[in-house]
Amino acid sequence: MAKEFRVTPWEVRGNVDYDKLVRQFGTQHITAEQAREIEELAGQRSRFLDRKIFFSQRGLSEFIEAHRKGKRVALYTGRGPSGGTHLGHLMPYYFTKYLQDAFGCDVYYQLTDDEKYLFKDNLSREDTAKYSLENALDFLAAGFDPARTHVIINTKAANVLYPLALDVAKRVTYSTAKAVFGFDDSTNIGSIFFTAMQSAPAFLPTVLAREKNKKAPPVPVLIPCAIDQDPHFRVTRDVAEKLDYPKPSLIHAKFLPALKGGEKMSASDDSTSIYVTDTPKQVAKKVGGAFTGGQATVEEQRAKGGNPDVCSVCAYLSYFFEPDNEKLTERLDAYRRGELLDGENKAYLTDKINSFLKEHNERKEKARKTLEKTLLC
Ligand code: TRP
Image (tube, rainbow, N blue to C red; front, top):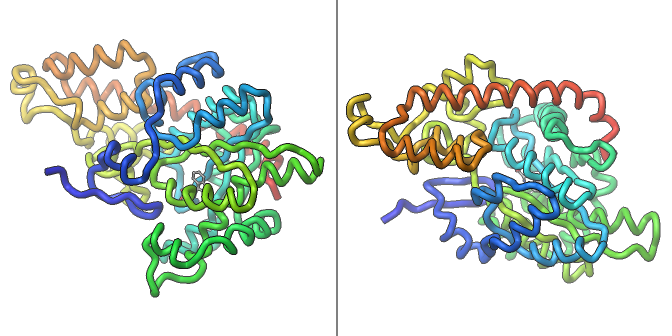
């Protein structure tokens, strides 16, 4: 039997069975039709959809439909600033940028510096403030149009978020918070309130539109996020109805696996995640030490072949770094047949990551000039 796994917004443990998680959480798989519709709007395919990296959703068709009818829509995503940016954080930013192009809409990016301060014993408010700015630059570097991008740093934008968070908090009981998030009597009271702050940006586009024009129609929002954030947004969707806002739609990603195999890339184990600040040498070293699906010796691998399904290097190529679908299939097949060895595969991935990071970091440098303009407050 597969080992037990556990997914909450603050902990991902074990080998996640995504089909099981969809049933546990009560979400839906993205259908081929929905993926096709998004790709049609974007005018190009997305490897994140093709390869089911973004795989699950709530209310996605309603969102697409609203856009089709010519309604103004918005995107909302975020990051808990607990450290620098690694590839696991970065990949969804690129998909969100693709969605911004597909829907031609504004994007709201929330940095929950309050959350990370409340939930992590080792972080000071200075730390989370510093990481917020750093993370925002990595977000902008994915190529977002600065005029349509709004960066929300929670403690800075509190004047805008707090009234909305109050509306939410008043309608969520402690018993719901305990049931959804597993809080107990030892949980600090800031953590219990926090989900209200993460809900607030889902309603913000409507509120801002109505500040300009009292009769503005509600703005449907789509939230790209890793599936561990779904519990927050279940609460948001319940409360939306009570507050008469449109329920936000969700599109969920799988986790980028750790290089050393198993669980998602962790911000606390440096050797198993690749950071945007890693040098090409560090990248080569980390990929070199990755867990693969290879055999103990070259001879054995040539004879028996490798197993791409458990191989982290193959997983990284599948997740993002081999953009060409056909080349990817060929590569994985060659690996399975023992024609492609780990050394070669690692060298290939290292090159791909390093050239991607070089370009990303150039865009990040440029983003320093636009950051100020994109801050909501
Ligand atoms: N709580 C998220 C995290 O720890 C950050 C976040 C806030 C977020 N709002 C979001 C993530 C919306 C995705 C979508 O990373």
